[in-house]
Image 1 (tube, rainbow, N blue to C red):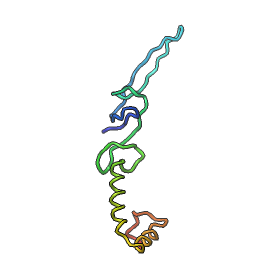
Image 2 (cartoon, helix red, strand yellow):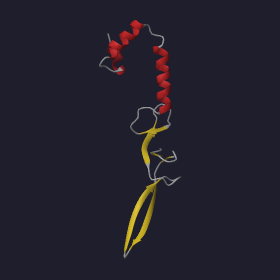
Image 3 (tube, one colour):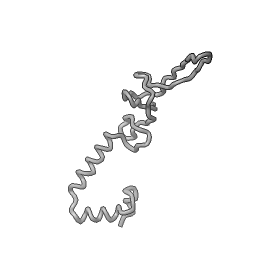
Image 4 (cartoon, helix red, strand yellow):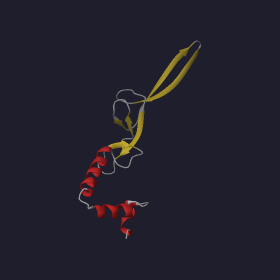
Length: 107
């Protein structure tokens, strides 16, 4: 399962590559590690997860990926464009302070 997306090249990957460095500073040796993208060696990547609808990789804090959100908005807009002014007002009243998840309890 993919866990990261590189912020530089856009590659999705499971685990970053760990690079070990040694640097001579005067009479001292500095050792450190760095995690990088396995493709471009970029050091900036974001955690992510698969979209629950299509499986495409997306940022961890989103509900749906960008493409699925766009399709959902288009479907909802197509539906909303068929409503009369009164139906829109009724939906607005139902949604005022509520969520669409509670739609079965609306009166």
